[in-house]
Image (cartoon, rainbow, N blue to C red; front, side):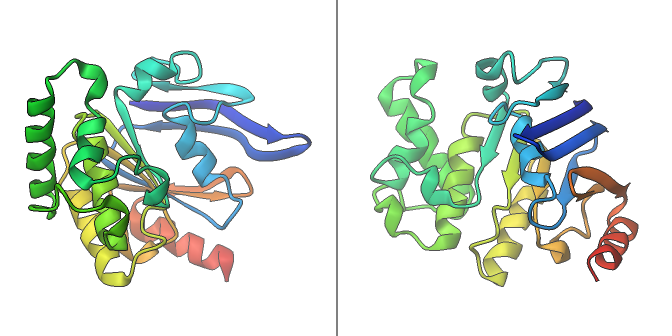
Length: 224
């Protein structure tokens, strides 16, 4: 369970997030809102990338702002631009690199990396230069590098922004098959029909919180 308790975040005099209280228990949750609405800031608070300046966030009772290292073992994060996450020369090395702190022997890391890549449509790409993959393949690689750690929660911050429509659909289809709790911050409203819950943010506050159809209907009216 992810809880936001009266959460705020300010940059100087500007409130990016203002008094947000949420309890997220559903399997598939989306944050939507215009640029600057606070959705990415909220998403980044879940694994401690951003700290609240008021209130607190809890993930199963653990505060990411205080125990970031502990939380990041349980909460994976996929960024908008996968190039910001790719750190190793080849796809196989990049996934294996995620396991380096677990004390797993190198051969086992390689085996697990190859297995994870194959599971998500990148079989045979272990030796392929990571930064020469297509945009969709890079985003799948970033996903593999998180999932190999078997997190409980996966937070994705606008991961489909740089993808074409086909790869957007493929990426979200992959998310829908995962056992993890998913929190997705996105502008791609057409991808959310099968989500359990949509939270609409406007100027740092929760404007709507409902099933996808009524929440997105409200959002479309809000921005029209």
